[in-house]
Length: 237
Image (cartoon, rainbow, N blue to C red; front, side, top):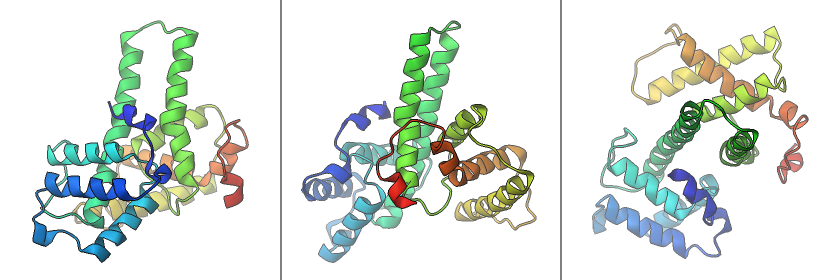
């Protein structure tokens, strides 16, 4: 399962860029990119920097795994025989959603199989949720400039909302709804749909976007109530 990659060395902790170059060569072969269509030295250097800046919390093997899933049609995106930042972003964005759904399904499956769950098992599930969803989110949140919408992030919102760590006034909720509609429109248009501001978002879609937006803006509020050390967070304030 995707969680095994969390134990491997992340890109931000690599001692040199040689591993990234080897990974790119692997992806050239996987995507069947012809020699004449491969990146030149300058383009490869730009892509290398793009990967280090945007996917530093991934491992080399997990990125390879993401591209294998994409090539196999598991991520529901169309690929061409080229490798660039746009292709990279498309694959990793779809993979993150795929991974979050896998984690959620895994946790729900465990919950359904066992009607009675012990305190020890509950603690184990909560720890996995903390390690694989919550901590990575707050680590990314330090660098985020806008809300990140996914079912995994909605699960984080639900968790802290139920604990009472997130509170929203009517004014805040209306503001978040407006932002949600704008982000939803951008998302639909990027997927090739013809929509405008009058297009209905739907209740489930609104809840998903609203939850992720509230989580983004209420980060400080949450961190005041939890005892998790997110190194460097206060430096960003």
